[in-house]
Structure formats: C-alpha cells, structure tokens
Length: 337
Image 1 (tube, rainbow, N blue to C red):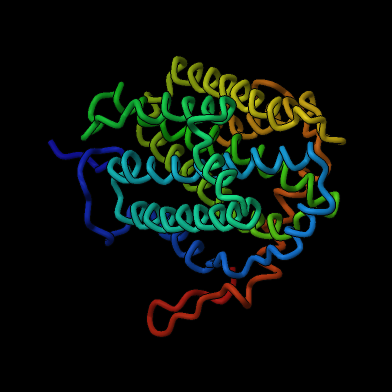
Image 2: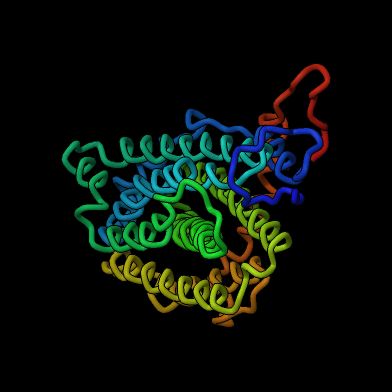
C-alpha cells in the first residue's frame, strides 16, 4: 500500500515538481541572495586594538574564542554531510543543505583569516588549531557534540521510530545547542567587546556569520516542525525530556568554557550573567521547538537584546545593494525581500 512520502522516509527523492516543501526552496533562494565574502572584512583596526587596547584578560578571552571558532564550524559541516544530507529526503531541502555547507566553509575561512591576523606567532596559531585536543573547556564542547550527533553516524537508513527519534535528537542538538547556544554565547563575547568600541572587524564579520547561523537554525526548526506534523508520535514525553536534559547539559558545558574564558576577570562580564544568558537562549530554543520554557530566565545583556532584531534588519537595510545577486531570465529573483 503506497502512502504519501514523508520528509524522513529513507531514500533519495529526486523530484522537484510537484514541490512538496516550497518553504525550503524559499530558504535556499534567500540564502543565495545574501552572499558575502571574507575579503570584505577589514581587520586593520583590530590589530591595533589587540596591541594597544586589550588587557591580558580580554586577550585571553579572544584567544579562547578564536580557538573555539577554529573547530566549531568544521564539526557542523561534517554533521551536515555525514548525517543530515543523507536523511532529510526532499530535493529542495537538500538544495538548502548544500548552500549551508558552502556557508559553513565560508565561516571556516573567516575564522582561519581571523586566526592568521590575530595570532601572527606560528606556535600560538598551531596551539589554537589544536584546541580540541589541548584546551579542556573546548574539548568538553566537542565531546558533547559528538555524543549527541555521532549516534546516527552508522545509520544508512532511518526506518524505525527509534531511529527517527535519534535523528531528531541529532538535529535538535545541532540547532539548539551547537548553533543556538555555543555559537550564540561566542557571539555575546564578540558583541560585548564591540559595545566597548573594540574589534570592529571581528564584529562586522560576526554580523554576517550571525545572520547565516540564524537562517541555519530556522531551517533546522522547520525540518523538525515538518517531521512533527507528519509523524506526531515521534514527539513523545521521553523525547521532550531528553531535549530538556540535552539543553541542561549544553548550558553546563558552555559554563565550563565561560569559567575559562572569563578566568582573567573581564570587567562587565560575569559567569553568573553568562549562565543567565545561556538559560535565556535555551528557553528561546525550547519555544522554537514548541516546548514550554524550562529556566524562565531573562536576558541580562542589554547589548544582546537588540542583536536578534537589529543585526538581521541592518543586514537587509545596509547590504541590499551589495548583496542582491542579479540573475537574468526566468529564474530572476524578486527584487523585494
């Protein structure tokens, strides 16, 4: 007996018409319209800031941050290729994932350029790239990622209900914890420094990375929402409890990094505020999953309050002429966003 194909059904559906999930195709088009390059980021002021304006505590923060950035997006890219692309069975969704893979490569290039600029000493640079091995707080984050996302690495086909739940947990970890918590925490450190007038090159590049990551999360949440709509039984109480446990674990993991990053005593940033901010982000992710908030935390960082709204808006207002890609012929993109 045939049934309507579902998003998580095994196989490689090749048919783009009739299109089953136009929302993924629109996300792909939006991403294409907003292309940026690392060459446009000006790091010249940052080098002066690093030499003359940052104290030892801030320098330690930055070194830890770029060390995390150096490996974070590579973990994400590997998960896209090895786990997600294989199992999200809609050609329009796979189009988006192929675009996301390009964006992750761009982020890796951005952080590579950042490291080369910020750490001219080859020994310090090599140490930063080996962060996953030699910095415990970063190793803990990597281990957390692998624990949740590698559980489906051996799966060629997700057929049973249990396998589908495993896949959803991978995707939820990816969207909520890696992109939605670890990277959002990293962005908070960057925007805190920007609020003090420091490291404008890092902040401007981060604006574009932030925008990309917000779109990646929106895609992942839409996949989860669609799967839930098609197969509501997958979202049982046990899965919901696992998600809350996963987020609690991610907050603790990121707090270990916060204790390390802030160990020099950075004026205006405390581990207590960082914990509250992480709990606030975790609650936002739960809400995006359609689940009740768990921590009931408010955002302690005024400089981040504007960020979600402001940067995405500013990107469109400021960059439309530079980033609207003109395509001639029948597939021309709409001029309006």
